[in-house]
Amino acid sequence: AGGQAAAAAAASLETLRLGVDASGPASPHFDLPAGDVGHVQVIALETFSILASYPDLYVGDLAALTISVTKHLDQDVTLRPVGQGLLFSPPIIRFVAGQERSRTFAVQGTVTGDIPVTYEVGGANAAHFIEPVESRIRIKPPETFALSAALGSRYVGETQELVVEASAA
Image (cartoon, rainbow, N blue to C red; front, side):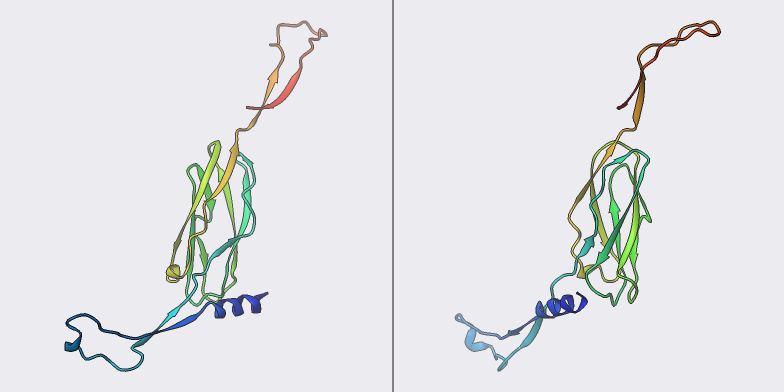
C-alpha cells in the first residue's frame, strides 16, 4: 500500500514550462528571453486520515481515535482538534518528521449536543496539508433513574413497592 501511495504522489507531480509572449502596441520595446523561462512544479497537498468516526458518548465518557498522515514527513506537522465543550488529549497531535505516521488521541465531552469538530493544521510542514473536513460528535446526557413513588415512613418489617426505571434525561 505504501508503494502505491508513493506512486500516486509521484504521478500527481506535473512540470509546467513557462514562456513569455508579448503583444500589444508596446511589444516591440521589450527584449524577450528565448525558449523556456522557467519551470513550475505542481504538487498535490497531503491530507490527514481519521481512521474512525466519532462515536456517540455520554457526558464524561472517553473515546480513542486514530489519525494518520498520508505520507512520510520530512518536517513536523501538528493537528489541533477543536470543539466547544470537548476535551482532547493530547490537545495538539504532533507528527514528528521521520517517525510513525499514526497517532491516537482521546476525546471527552463536557456538554451535551451534536458538536462540530474542526481541525487546525500547524508546524513546519503545515503549508503542504489540507485541513481535514469538519467532523461531528454527539454527546448525550447521562441516564437517570426515576422512582414511581416517594418512600414514606414504615415500621420495621413493613414493605412498600417501588418501581425504578432507567431513562435518558
